[in-house]
Image (cartoon, rainbow, N blue to C red; front, side, top):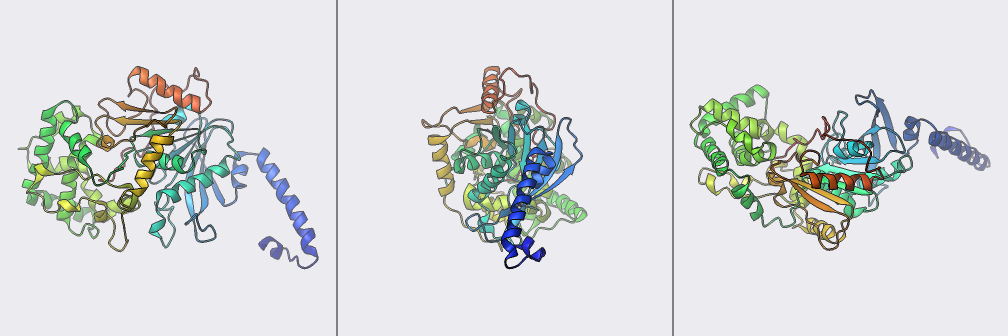
Length: 468
């Protein structure tokens, strides 16, 4: 309509003008179909495309902004621009959909599945993570179905270019995102590789986390030492707070969300053991300070492992969309801190509501969404590969396959943490089987020489950890 008005066409000339316009559109689409990938991407309705200088040999690098409805049930309502990174190799190569669950990485990288199949890769920024956030933000639309439908619309358009096999993948919340997308749109992709994805199907029963911290690893002395350090941080609260305040003043950190530095400090202590096992290996216990170390040494250990700046307004702000989802649909871990009592003052604050500004309303769905996902995986999962690290606390409540699942598997990498991957992490037989799964789903020759060792830049978000 705007084109006709701009051309000054009215009355009897409208039909003729429409015919000319249709011919021109058909010709343009034909040119884009046969032309350069940049032209074909730009021909997608609602797509803005910027090509950047590639840092990976054999790939072209594009930043895409795709127009998405805030509410897919009301496509005529408000819209927002969703950011997507595309690494293009060839239109006839497999496509890997990398769902970070958070922001889109701003560097080129090769996810493990993309390297295994020598494929293209798109990295999709999760809705409501800046800048892929509608303004003003209707937080009720920050949910798993809306996000899955974002991916579905994008895939539908990109398949007009990449009409090949598709593999979805992601780690942690990105792995959860891949599962949810496949539950709602099971035919969008030909296989899914899901890393270290929690499955909190019973949010009011978190005994699995307590069992994890009582049994993780094979060195009871390491577990006891971590608990002793956490208690010592609280015993020396005044000294720790003095150093925390000095760092906050220097960094300009504020604490309106958690209200006080004392609450922020205590939340970091409750995260200490969790963060150690998530990021470190048991062998790293040897590098921890003794419980009678100096105040400076203890503070350095707490800051290095928990990251005290994370509990400031500035540290929490990028993760508010995650905490909102955890407190409304995803659920959250609630380990017991018996060994830290009675030194704790704010134990009840260890939950998502604490990390979301009070003016954003939240209401938990009592696990309805996660029970639906869990039932679907057990009854309907097909072409899905789940991988966990045995020493990762997030794996305490994993996805499990049921009688209805097909062509799928769950593997656990011994001694590994939240960075568990297929290559060089699994026993040889499971490694071979998992690679065969991925290549078969992608339609790649199983004997083709692709990735043999882990990619150097695999998953730049693997160490991005909300404290819950």
